[in-house]
Image (cartoon, rainbow over all chains, first blue to last red; front, side):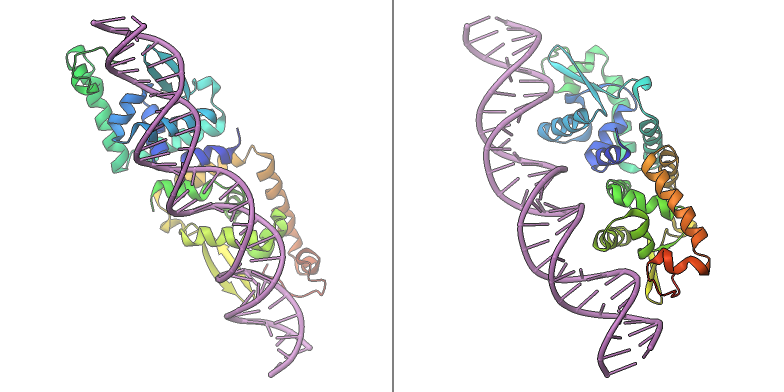
Length: 129
Length: 129
DNA sequence: GATCTATATTCCGTTAAAGGAATGTAGTTG
DNA sequence: CAACTACATTCCTTTAACGGAATATAGATC
């Protein structure tokens, strides 16, 4: 993958937020939706964009699609450098920090009791987390 | 300047090459043209794009426009981080390395005797370098 | 002041990105 | 198997980027 293609993936705010969250670990689409507060289409399309270009991987788990960064070994030097740079830059940025705070909350909430509330199913169903 | 705007400036190959060369120091438009082998319009427009967004500064020197990165003190943390990242990534990339090699040659050639040849004026006129 | 040089800008067509609405689909549950 | 859930895709419109051809402009030179 060429360097410029990495930057093309990084040049949209939604994609930046997605990638930044993925630096913390894999996530499913529904979680991205609630974390970013963006529409399903928007999230799905940007994830598709990143997947097509090899910046994320996707795997199905029941009804849920789990997105993740490629395994470390599979990351080019350019990608590693830019992901590290993104993480540095995000550390001092309000939007990214808010996303991260919400993610922490989500991690806590993903204890079974609170799953329904977090995922909005309202039925106490299992979730991807 | 927002982080995403930096990435928007970086997401075109011509602009990446321009910025990479500018990491070595200021340059005029005619040198960019010969170094990149791209049309005047293309170079000028991309420099304009970068200037509008504050990633480069421009100053006139006679007939020549000298472009440069903003002074270090004026660079945001994000910009510094991304310029450093670009420099790292470019170090292992054929296109960037070729640009750099040509720049070295140009620096040597910019001793007065070879100016005319380098700049293509064919008249031994002074050049921006 | 006419001309030349280096660069910028305008006009134009082409292409790609972005996002919403609606619809399709794979897998699950009752 | 019918209904539901999570997600992807298609269709559409709007907007921006890209780059070439032609033209404009600022400053230098003769």
